[in-house]
Image 1 (tube, rainbow, N blue to C red):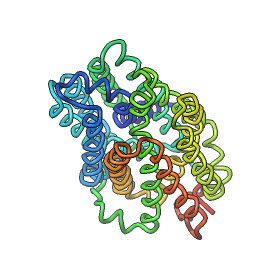
Image 2: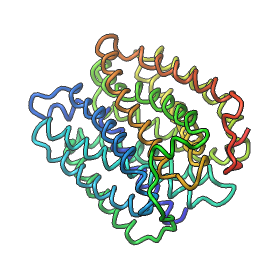
Image 3: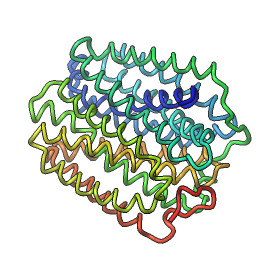
Image 4: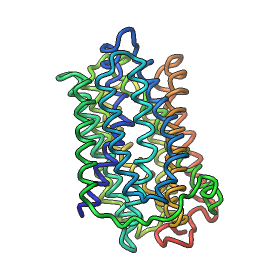
Length: 384
């Protein structure tokens, strides 16, 4: 692994912590903010998703003009500011505002990191290189979200946010000392990205995949602490096991290059449907949820690799706009997952949420077999 790829992995890891850490620590954060409840704290995930979506739509395409490397450095700096504001927040309003700042930064950071990974990938190893960068999500879950959950019990949740601010600043400094070969040209726009052939189906794929994930993930931590009566540290075990499954799958990314995306996608999404249904059935059992979390990480890693690889292959000259649209759709789904999931969770509990996720994955399993789903003139690894 080269130094640039390592820094991209760390950047994705920090973004992953930002997106995923509220679920297991929401109850602890609520206790530290006057008059706040866990559900109100988790509304921060919805605001974060909305801010990320808007940022990705408006700001991410500027990476095609200034260079994805410069955009990523600026975004890491803003992440450091957002984490510091969250850690020092005196009340719920300031905390929610900090989540919006983190969302603006994420909307630029994630597409910039993915674009740099695509530029750095050797020919014929696109999926393997993207898989290495995507393993930053593993880092966030195993060494980020899980540590934050345990640390919230031992040191307090504020310490965790301040530590993340310091880490984001250190990675930004590392990026400043690293030379990238990201091209600089003219800024593209989301409208131009929407004209790329195949973009509609590609965005529908990422939307269904991520809404299915966040419907279930956002409230699983609160389910563990409030419904099953476990501790915040125990809730952190769910993302930990999920992250181990996500990371283990990195070794299998090369087979996407060898087998082709179409042959990988069809059985993968069909299996994911069964997995979500199994999580609904296992909702009363903490041990069963932990066992299924490993398989959940396995399927989500491969699905995310397929979805992002499909988008980056559509048009290399408009990756900033395309990946901005990707992040926009992803974080609209973060917002919807938190908002709609909150209504369902309050009324019916956790078990119906994985069932809703399963219905979305049925669409993906069907779409993967539609003619031309994976055909593109730019990349041989995304093919029928």
